Length: 287
Image: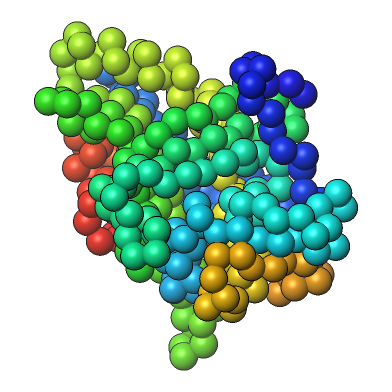
Protein backbone atom coordinates (compact mmCIF):
# COMPACT_ATOMS: atom_id res chain seq x y z
CA UNK A 1 0.00 0.00 0.00
CA UNK A 2 1.17 3.53 -0.67
CA UNK A 3 1.30 6.37 1.82
CA UNK A 4 -0.93 9.42 1.61
CA UNK A 5 2.29 11.42 1.93
CA UNK A 6 4.30 10.54 -1.21
CA UNK A 7 7.53 11.28 0.65
CA UNK A 8 6.76 8.75 3.40
CA UNK A 9 7.31 5.06 2.73
CA UNK A 10 6.78 2.33 5.32
CA UNK A 11 9.74 -0.07 5.60
CA UNK A 12 9.16 -3.62 4.42
CA UNK A 13 7.49 -5.78 7.10
CA UNK A 14 9.76 -7.94 9.22
CA UNK A 15 8.91 -11.68 9.13
CA UNK A 16 10.11 -12.64 12.61
CA UNK A 17 7.87 -15.70 12.79
CA UNK A 18 6.32 -14.57 16.08
CA UNK A 19 2.83 -15.62 17.16
CA UNK A 20 1.13 -12.22 17.38
CA UNK A 21 -1.54 -11.61 20.00
CA UNK A 22 -5.16 -11.02 18.93
CA UNK A 23 -7.12 -8.05 20.23
CA UNK A 24 -9.18 -10.48 22.33
CA UNK A 25 -6.12 -10.96 24.58
CA UNK A 26 -6.99 -7.72 26.37
CA UNK A 27 -9.72 -5.67 28.02
CA UNK A 28 -10.62 -2.53 26.05
CA UNK A 29 -13.08 0.35 26.45
CA UNK A 30 -13.67 3.80 24.94
CA UNK A 31 -15.65 6.44 26.85
CA UNK A 32 -16.66 9.69 25.14
CA UNK A 33 -17.84 12.64 27.22
CA UNK A 34 -20.59 15.09 26.23
CA UNK A 35 -17.99 17.77 25.34
CA UNK A 36 -16.36 15.46 22.76
CA UNK A 37 -13.39 14.51 24.95
CA UNK A 38 -12.82 10.78 25.11
CA UNK A 39 -10.84 8.26 27.10
CA UNK A 40 -9.41 4.85 26.28
CA UNK A 41 -8.58 2.09 28.75
CA UNK A 42 -6.59 -0.94 27.55
CA UNK A 43 -5.56 -3.70 29.94
CA UNK A 44 -3.17 -6.25 28.43
CA UNK A 45 -2.66 -9.92 29.05
CA UNK A 46 0.21 -10.77 31.39
CA UNK A 47 3.62 -10.37 29.75
CA UNK A 48 5.81 -13.44 30.28
CA UNK A 49 9.60 -13.39 30.48
CA UNK A 50 9.64 -9.62 30.91
CA UNK A 51 10.27 -7.50 34.01
CA UNK A 52 9.41 -3.91 34.89
CA UNK A 53 13.14 -3.16 34.93
CA UNK A 54 13.44 -4.32 31.32
CA UNK A 55 10.51 -2.13 30.29
CA UNK A 56 12.00 0.90 32.04
CA UNK A 57 15.29 0.31 30.19
CA UNK A 58 13.37 0.05 26.91
CA UNK A 59 11.52 3.33 27.32
CA UNK A 60 14.75 5.10 28.24
CA UNK A 61 16.67 3.83 25.23
CA UNK A 62 14.45 2.57 22.39
CA UNK A 63 14.49 5.67 20.15
CA UNK A 64 18.30 5.59 19.90
CA UNK A 65 18.97 1.83 19.87
CA UNK A 66 20.08 0.03 16.71
CA UNK A 67 19.73 -3.72 16.17
CA UNK A 68 21.46 -5.95 13.61
CA UNK A 69 18.98 -8.57 12.44
CA UNK A 70 20.00 -12.14 11.69
CA UNK A 71 17.98 -14.82 9.89
CA UNK A 72 15.08 -12.46 9.11
CA UNK A 73 14.04 -12.73 5.41
CA UNK A 74 15.01 -9.59 3.52
CA UNK A 75 16.84 -8.18 6.56
CA UNK A 76 19.65 -10.64 7.29
CA UNK A 77 22.66 -8.60 8.43
CA UNK A 78 20.73 -5.33 8.22
CA UNK A 79 20.91 -2.77 11.04
CA UNK A 80 17.47 -1.36 11.88
CA UNK A 81 16.10 0.93 14.60
CA UNK A 82 15.01 -1.05 17.65
CA UNK A 83 11.59 0.51 17.03
CA UNK A 84 11.28 -1.88 14.05
CA UNK A 85 11.17 -4.84 16.44
CA UNK A 86 8.35 -3.34 18.52
CA UNK A 87 5.89 -4.09 15.71
CA UNK A 88 6.58 -6.20 12.60
CA UNK A 89 4.75 -3.93 10.13
CA UNK A 90 3.31 -0.70 11.61
CA UNK A 91 6.38 1.25 12.78
CA UNK A 92 8.21 3.79 10.66
CA UNK A 93 10.43 5.78 13.05
CA UNK A 94 10.85 7.30 16.52
CA UNK A 95 13.26 10.11 17.39
CA UNK A 96 14.08 11.97 20.61
CA UNK A 97 14.62 15.73 20.59
CA UNK A 98 15.37 18.45 23.10
CA UNK A 99 17.20 18.08 26.42
CA UNK A 100 17.89 14.38 26.91
CA UNK A 101 19.04 12.23 29.79
CA UNK A 102 22.49 10.63 30.20
CA UNK A 103 23.65 8.89 27.04
CA UNK A 104 20.89 10.48 24.97
CA UNK A 105 18.08 8.73 26.83
CA UNK A 106 14.43 9.68 27.29
CA UNK A 107 13.81 12.32 29.94
CA UNK A 108 10.83 14.27 31.24
CA UNK A 109 10.70 17.51 29.29
CA UNK A 110 12.20 16.03 26.13
CA UNK A 111 10.21 15.45 22.94
CA UNK A 112 9.61 12.27 20.98
CA UNK A 113 8.58 12.27 17.32
CA UNK A 114 6.66 9.12 16.42
CA UNK A 115 5.74 7.97 12.94
CA UNK A 116 3.59 4.85 12.55
CA UNK A 117 0.31 3.59 11.07
CA UNK A 118 -2.38 1.56 12.77
CA UNK A 119 -2.73 -1.89 11.14
CA UNK A 120 -0.72 -0.77 8.13
CA UNK A 121 -1.02 -4.03 6.20
CA UNK A 122 -4.82 -3.73 6.36
CA UNK A 123 -5.40 0.03 6.15
CA UNK A 124 -2.20 1.53 4.76
CA UNK A 125 -1.88 5.14 5.99
CA UNK A 126 -5.59 5.55 6.82
CA UNK A 127 -4.81 5.80 10.56
CA UNK A 128 -1.39 7.46 10.76
CA UNK A 129 0.58 8.98 13.60
CA UNK A 130 3.27 11.44 12.54
CA UNK A 131 3.60 13.82 15.46
CA UNK A 132 5.85 15.17 18.18
CA UNK A 133 4.81 14.65 21.80
CA UNK A 134 6.27 15.80 25.07
CA UNK A 135 7.56 13.20 27.53
CA UNK A 136 5.68 13.73 30.80
CA UNK A 137 6.77 10.69 32.83
CA UNK A 138 9.45 8.00 32.60
CA UNK A 139 10.27 5.80 35.57
CA UNK A 140 10.41 2.22 36.77
CA UNK A 141 6.64 1.89 36.76
CA UNK A 142 5.62 3.51 33.52
CA UNK A 143 5.74 6.15 30.79
CA UNK A 144 3.60 9.12 29.72
CA UNK A 145 3.66 11.39 26.70
CA UNK A 146 1.31 13.93 25.22
CA UNK A 147 0.59 17.48 24.22
CA UNK A 148 -0.51 20.59 26.12
CA UNK A 149 -2.22 23.73 24.84
CA UNK A 150 -0.80 26.97 26.32
CA UNK A 151 -3.14 28.43 28.96
CA UNK A 152 -5.60 25.55 28.54
CA UNK A 153 -3.64 22.54 29.77
CA UNK A 154 -3.43 18.97 28.44
CA UNK A 155 -5.06 18.15 25.12
CA UNK A 156 -3.72 14.61 24.77
CA UNK A 157 -1.98 12.25 27.21
CA UNK A 158 -1.02 8.61 26.76
CA UNK A 159 -0.09 6.91 30.05
CA UNK A 160 1.43 3.44 30.36
CA UNK A 161 1.60 1.57 33.67
CA UNK A 162 3.57 -1.62 34.36
CA UNK A 163 4.19 -3.72 37.45
CA UNK A 164 5.92 -7.01 38.23
CA UNK A 165 3.57 -9.83 39.21
CA UNK A 166 4.60 -12.65 41.56
CA UNK A 167 3.13 -15.99 42.56
CA UNK A 168 4.64 -16.28 46.00
CA UNK A 169 8.36 -15.69 45.45
CA UNK A 170 8.23 -16.56 41.75
CA UNK A 171 8.09 -13.80 39.15
CA UNK A 172 5.40 -14.71 36.60
CA UNK A 173 5.28 -11.64 34.38
CA UNK A 174 4.30 -7.99 34.09
CA UNK A 175 0.90 -6.34 34.29
CA UNK A 176 0.84 -3.74 31.47
CA UNK A 177 -1.99 -1.22 31.45
CA UNK A 178 -2.62 1.71 29.05
CA UNK A 179 -4.82 4.80 29.44
CA UNK A 180 -5.35 7.58 26.89
CA UNK A 181 -7.20 10.89 27.19
CA UNK A 182 -7.85 12.97 24.07
CA UNK A 183 -9.26 16.50 24.15
CA UNK A 184 -9.75 19.39 26.56
CA UNK A 185 -11.76 18.87 29.75
CA UNK A 186 -13.69 22.16 29.63
CA UNK A 187 -17.33 22.55 28.63
CA UNK A 188 -16.88 25.87 26.81
CA UNK A 189 -17.26 26.37 23.07
CA UNK A 190 -13.53 26.46 22.37
CA UNK A 191 -12.97 23.12 24.18
CA UNK A 192 -15.75 21.51 22.16
CA UNK A 193 -14.28 22.92 18.94
CA UNK A 194 -10.78 21.60 19.76
CA UNK A 195 -12.21 18.23 20.76
CA UNK A 196 -14.10 17.93 17.49
CA UNK A 197 -10.88 18.64 15.58
CA UNK A 198 -8.96 16.03 17.58
CA UNK A 199 -11.71 13.45 17.23
CA UNK A 200 -11.64 13.85 13.47
CA UNK A 201 -8.07 12.54 13.49
CA UNK A 202 -7.69 10.57 16.74
CA UNK A 203 -11.27 9.59 17.45
CA UNK A 204 -12.96 6.32 18.41
CA UNK A 205 -12.55 4.91 14.88
CA UNK A 206 -8.80 5.55 15.03
CA UNK A 207 -8.51 3.94 18.46
CA UNK A 208 -10.49 0.89 17.42
CA UNK A 209 -7.71 0.29 14.85
CA UNK A 210 -5.10 1.25 17.47
CA UNK A 211 -6.46 -1.46 19.80
CA UNK A 212 -5.19 -4.33 17.62
CA UNK A 213 -2.00 -2.42 16.82
CA UNK A 214 -1.18 -1.92 20.49
CA UNK A 215 -2.02 -5.49 21.55
CA UNK A 216 0.46 -6.75 18.93
CA UNK A 217 3.02 -4.09 19.89
CA UNK A 218 2.96 -4.89 23.60
CA UNK A 219 2.84 -8.64 23.00
CA UNK A 220 6.10 -8.54 21.02
CA UNK A 221 7.98 -7.60 24.20
CA UNK A 222 7.81 -11.30 25.06
CA UNK A 223 9.71 -12.13 21.84
CA UNK A 224 12.55 -9.62 21.78
CA UNK A 225 12.95 -7.57 24.96
CA UNK A 226 14.80 -10.05 27.19
CA UNK A 227 17.46 -10.83 24.52
CA UNK A 228 18.07 -7.13 23.89
CA UNK A 229 18.16 -6.30 27.59
CA UNK A 230 20.82 -9.01 28.10
CA UNK A 231 23.03 -7.05 25.65
CA UNK A 232 22.41 -3.66 27.29
CA UNK A 233 26.10 -3.10 28.11
CA UNK A 234 27.19 -3.55 24.50
CA UNK A 235 26.35 -0.03 23.41
CA UNK A 236 23.84 1.20 20.86
CA UNK A 237 24.06 -1.62 18.28
CA UNK A 238 22.60 -4.91 19.48
CA UNK A 239 21.82 -8.19 17.67
CA UNK A 240 18.60 -10.12 17.30
CA UNK A 241 17.65 -13.38 15.58
CA UNK A 242 14.30 -15.19 15.83
CA UNK A 243 16.26 -18.07 17.34
CA UNK A 244 16.73 -15.84 20.40
CA UNK A 245 12.94 -15.65 21.01
CA UNK A 246 12.55 -16.86 24.62
CA UNK A 247 8.86 -17.80 24.21
CA UNK A 248 9.03 -19.47 20.78
CA UNK A 249 6.63 -22.40 20.59
CA UNK A 250 4.84 -21.57 23.82
CA UNK A 251 1.30 -20.22 24.19
CA UNK A 252 0.79 -16.61 25.24
CA UNK A 253 -1.87 -15.46 27.70
CA UNK A 254 -5.25 -15.29 25.97
CA UNK A 255 -7.12 -12.67 28.02
CA UNK A 256 -6.49 -9.39 29.80
CA UNK A 257 -4.92 -9.53 33.24
CA UNK A 258 -6.76 -8.29 36.36
CA UNK A 259 -10.22 -7.57 35.00
CA UNK A 260 -11.23 -6.03 38.34
CA UNK A 261 -8.57 -3.32 37.89
CA UNK A 262 -9.84 -2.64 34.37
CA UNK A 263 -13.47 -2.41 35.49
CA UNK A 264 -12.56 -0.04 38.33
CA UNK A 265 -10.62 2.29 36.05
CA UNK A 266 -13.41 2.39 33.46
CA UNK A 267 -16.01 3.13 36.15
CA UNK A 268 -13.83 5.89 37.59
CA UNK A 269 -13.26 7.66 34.28
CA UNK A 270 -16.98 7.57 33.52
CA UNK A 271 -17.67 9.23 36.88
CA UNK A 272 -15.10 12.03 36.67
CA UNK A 273 -15.50 15.51 35.19
CA UNK A 274 -11.71 15.81 34.75
CA UNK A 275 -10.18 12.76 33.06
CA UNK A 276 -6.66 14.22 33.34
CA UNK A 277 -7.00 14.30 37.12
CA UNK A 278 -8.22 10.69 36.96
CA UNK A 279 -5.25 9.79 34.77
CA UNK A 280 -2.69 11.50 37.06
CA UNK A 281 -0.12 11.03 34.32
CA UNK A 282 2.80 12.70 36.15
CA UNK A 283 2.34 10.65 39.32
CA UNK A 284 3.63 7.15 40.16
CA UNK A 285 1.62 4.27 38.75
CA UNK A 286 -1.78 3.50 40.23
CA UNK A 287 -1.15 -0.27 39.83
